[in-house]
Length: 421
Image (cartoon, rainbow, N blue to C red; front, side, top):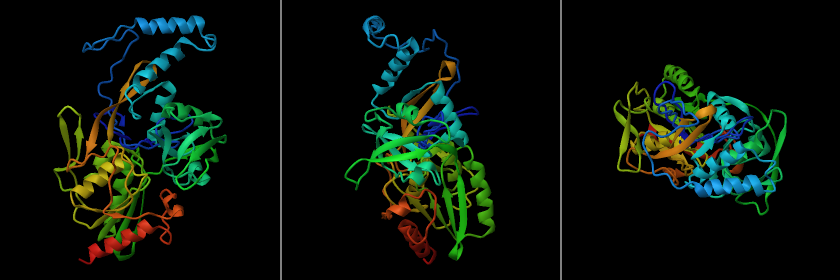
């Protein structure tokens, strides 16, 4: 996904960014009928929150008499009172609190959704393999995974889901959409979508499967150019990228093409981990704006093995969160040229706060800024060379087809021009 850029703060942390992954999985939630979003793996203090929890800092509580009055009326007069439990009413009330923020990335995760998110960040789950997010009133596909049921069915980035099965999901939360889409491998779900360029809504029947998330792939191209594909920023990416760097370095590369297209994000810390290979020690990779005048700089230190190599970064509308953090830093620090289309625009920071009974609250606490102070949220990154791919190329997550991929062809043109300077 998810979805978001999660930010790690200590050993046991978890957090969400811009990706996010987008996850619709067998118990998945968050941005991924597959996952995506850049998240901040950031579990501040893991304190147990009991049923009689009270905050350490006193807040101005409203008068709850109307709340209990409505509760009692529902329990005594509603035609559905025999079908709804107290737990369901409570969960609905909590969801109402987060929806009042008008922030699609802040949400309450019940036990099932919380377990699904943790599952996906590990790198495998049952689902359809596409990141989802919410844009306005619409549940929107950020990007499908390579080889996933979603990709094979023909779903594309920016498809708007208006129905799941027979249920209208316009205005619904990502959580609600996940509950409708999730299911065991081998079963099917129908999605009715609207898409720019098609006049009538179209129904896609997608068979769920066990999704194993790839992290990194690479190959050497002509003229000693290394092509590196980063699929997402999950638990596996740091080690996979480290290993890829060793092998690439042994091939003496003269230039780098870094492909972040359809990369929905994941762990914020992983974006910083990859950054250390491209930036000189002490460089600011990203800024965190808390909205109250407080801005925190994140600097990277490490073996800047690619720092002086000409670099081109491929991005598109499916590049989100942690992908945008890395691409934005490379552009701002004049370390790379961006080619492709404007990125998704997921630049908010979510803290994943553990609650009682294995539940959690995903809450937006800040926004990411590029090193030059550019806001990512809602805007995205505009490439230096804007190139629109033909549909067959842009819909293929992670596959490299040099004959139809116009963005890749432009990246080759740009990298060769940089090598010849």
